[in-house]
Structures are given as C-alpha cells and as structure tokens.
Amino acid sequence: MNELQREIREIADEKKALILAHYYQTMDVQEIADVVGDSFELAKRASLAEQNVIALCGVRFMAESVKILSPDKTVLLPAPDAGCPMADMVTPEDVLRLRREHPDAAVVCYVNSSAAVKAVSDICCTSSSAERIVRSLPQKQVIFVPDQNLGAYVASRVPEKEVFPHSGYCPIHHAVSEKDVLAAKSAHTEARLLVHPECPPAVVAMADGVGSTAYILKTVEAAPDGESFIIGTETGVVERLRATAPGKKTYLLRDRFVCPNMKKTTLHDVKRALERFEENIMLDEAEMLAARASLKRMIEVA
Ligand code: 13P
Ligand code: SF4
Image 1 (tube, rainbow, N blue to C red):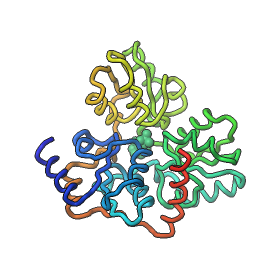
Image 2 (image 1 turned 135 degrees about the horizontal axis):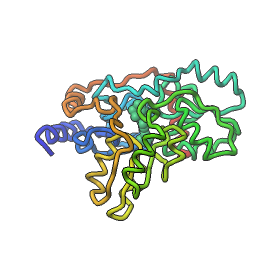
Image 3 (image 1 turned 135 degrees about the vertical axis):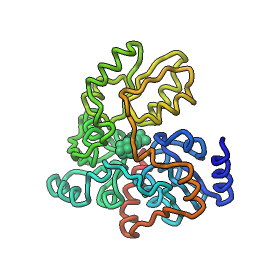
Image 4 (image 1 turned 90 degrees about the vertical axis):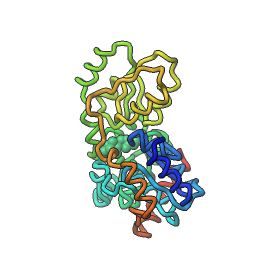
C-alpha cells in the first residue's frame, strides 16, 4: 500500500466506515476496499454490514441500492458524477406503460436502474441472479427492464417464460461484435471465451461461459495454471486477474473495454468522501420504501 492508501485505511478505521468496491474499479481503489465484489455481493454485503458508514466505490445505482437497503446508514458515493448510462434508459413511466401493455406480467428490474424504477417494479435482479429470479416467479409473462441483452439471455435460459425486454443496453458491452470475437479467437486459438450477459446475443452465443463479473473471476481463478481465457467484460476484471490468477493467461476481448464511469473514482475522492461525508446519498422516503421491497425480494430469492 502507498502512503495515500494507508491514510485512507486509517480514516476508514477511525470513522468505522466500510469501503465497498466493484470489480471494475481501478486496482488502487480495489486494494483499499474491505470488500470487492459484483453488484449482487456488494448489495448483500451492505445489507449485513455492522458499520454505520458505507463508502461505495462504483456508480450511482450501486450506492442508491445500499442506501435503500440501509436507510439509517450514511452511504457515500466518492465520485458523485459516476452514473450508469443504461440505468438512465428506463423511466418509471416506461415501466407503467409496459405494465398496461402486459397486465399479467411481473416486472423484473436489473439493479442497473434508478430508485424510482425499482419502486415501480416487482423484484430486482443482478446479472448473477437474473435467471434464478425469473425462474422463481409465479407469472408466465415477465417484463424485463432496462437491459435488452440480459433480458434476451434470461429468455434463452428460461424458455418456459415469455420475456418482454425493454430496449436499454450498456454502451460498453453492447459495442462488442461477432467480428471482435472472431479476431480474438483467431489470435488466441487455445483460449476459452467468458462473457458478461450485457453483451449482444450473437456474442453470447459464441461464448464458452456466460455470467457476472464474479462468475468470470471465479472461473478463471479455479482453472489450472497455464490455461488461457478471452475476457468479455470491463478491463478491471482482467487487471484483477493479473493479481489473483497470475498463472493463467487472460486477454481482453476488445481494445478499450473500459467503463468511463467506473473509472471516475480516485483515491483522493475516497479520502475526501470519508473526511467530509460527501456525497451523502439522500433519497425520497416513499420511493425508498417501495424500492426496498423489490431489492429485499431479490436477496431472499437469490
Ligand atoms: P455485475 O453484476 O456482474 O457486477 O455487473 C455490473 C455491471 O454494471 C456490469 O456492467
Ligand atoms: Fe453501466 Fe455498462 Fe458501466 Fe456497467 S459497464 S456500470 S452497465 S455503463
């Protein structure tokens, strides 16, 4: 740890704060976190936390989810301008319109969404829990918001359900093409391809494994040394694997596989957030109550 990282750890310990970081954060931020995880692990870990202060190194919907689950805690987002463009692609009005179009359908909302959208949904999911959540529903019809690609992946995994995906997408994962896959496979013929389900269906169909960031990390870490993998998700996962699985060869599926919002958090931001308690996430009480029901259902089922 460098000087600044040690200082941050001291402040966090003094203020009895828990630092959570997503796998897409830069390695220097991952190194100072108490817990590094995928969206599901971070939401679950936050809901069990004893600490009264939680700093979420990630994007806004993640910090909002922590606040919704722990409304009495101080929840800090060190990089206030770190959003998720996909989360902004669906509004509560879209959900209400879809409900009118499909009155018998349950509404499943990916956690990459606003608190207002969670509040008008029946249950949330993450990429690691989406299949299990949709399978668990009594309804045959399912409205899935906002990610069209995760919606299509779930529909292919649970064919007994009729899934109506919304049109949202992650600009980073949606940009991957079959051409990228063919180029990576011909450059690394021995490598297995692991992709995130936010990638388009044509890319998912060419993969050897599909799952959340945690699934991709665990699959590579558990493989014998010497094996090779092409990684179809954000570069933070490959950077982490260099530290946690140095005996494996890992290649990023395409150049510039970077989420600019996830890279906004710096060590200085984390230090300032802990010192000044900024940005302290505040949400509407009624909205939080309704959104909490959707998030809690997810945690119970998953
Ligand atoms: P995970 O749930 O796999 O961590 O994914 C979150 C995300 O934002 C992927 O782009
Ligand atoms: Fe949102 Fe995509 Fe970034 Fe994940 S990688 S936070 S879905 S923009």
